[in-house]
Length: 337
Image (cartoon, rainbow, N blue to C red):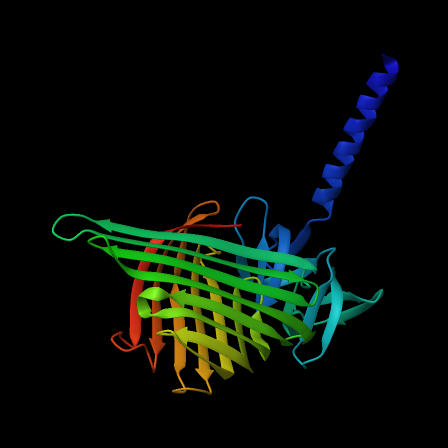
């Protein structure tokens, strides 16, 4: 019995020590008015320091009002002169911020800190699933259903991006849309923010007489910016495409263009997104295919959000009897994980 009690006692001590250690290693900033803020320092950007305390959402303070920064984590830091270093924040000395660079202290003026960000995680991911549906009854019966899912996974210097659209529309029990679209790209960050890789897509829409269209190619791209609150990346490349339209199959060389933009507002409760894809076929009628998806996500509860988006599809050479464009306003619910 005494042995069991002793083990429980030691376990409690270990747990308490672990918790106190976690508290002790929290980042800390001291303001010029004497306030001390403990939390998780996220970044320094545009002369603002962003911190997330345990008791509130992430917020920012002006860097000119910060006297001292202390933290355990190594940050990627850029100074005003353009030099870049990996360093820890180690408090203040002689009215300057102390940085620990490879074990050695470096004193800099606080306003010399142009940017600081947490190093990219070895593994990171972000995924969404949206369901949009409308039903109308009466003089006209219609059903419009669309499932959209996307995922972005990064493992070290490799990034995988994919999205899937499944859309079914009916009016008076007659199908007016049967679109299936899948896109995938692999990026190798060979010289961050530059990357190269492979892109592929597959699409069908028998209502538009498109039995299938697939493409594959090599791309090169660049992240214009990519941090915890915003992403803008562009890529272009060349490859091969084949499509069967009106029972006629054509194939040949293809050019690609892709842009992805996302930005969080209101501490991440509101997200603006814009994706555009352009494919040019160097064969047949030199068809140009342009697709965009632009909208907002509004957080409702934890990982559940509402969404509203405008999707626009355009082709310069559509099948005879079909329009060259398709516009959709989609409103629905989604989940992120």
